Length: 172
Image (cartoon, rainbow, N blue to C red; front, side, top):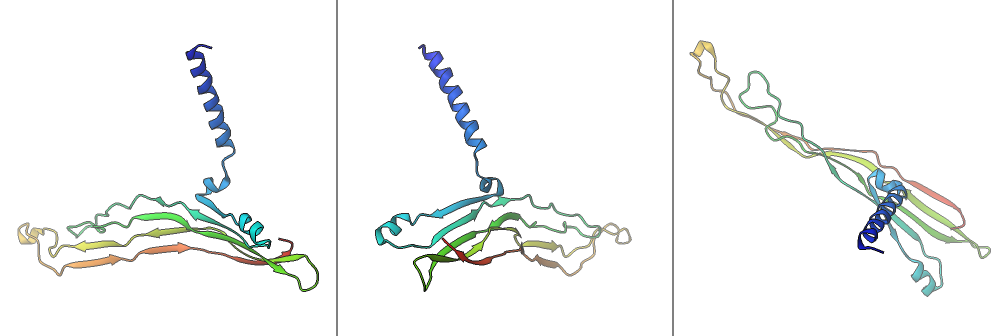
């Protein structure tokens, strides 16, 4: 086989593999979370007992674009001198299932806590400042008047709706 034929074949195989990998991508990646399993199978075999199953989800942070300054009539400086930076992401999720031995018999029941990842929207604190001068006035021959300076801190924002469920049932 010629080197150019081998290179073309390698490029085609790489493209097919990428397409198959994209088609089988997990929905967690589309949702903005990364699953984090905790493998305990080795410890179960070495201890010869059932251990809890633990898995989690870590959110991916996505920074947004800040709102620009707003110009207000009657002020020399814009309304938001230091704008708030919005960041969206999520709270981490967890899924914990632990065996619960029955008092009668050899079967196991389970108890679990499911706390799915939830959306989180935040905004960093901002700053609103106004100069100690007013806008130029015609009655003062185009000169500004003095006034008290203004300083305001825009409070940070945190919005989320977390949820969790406690489940019990047969089997593990």
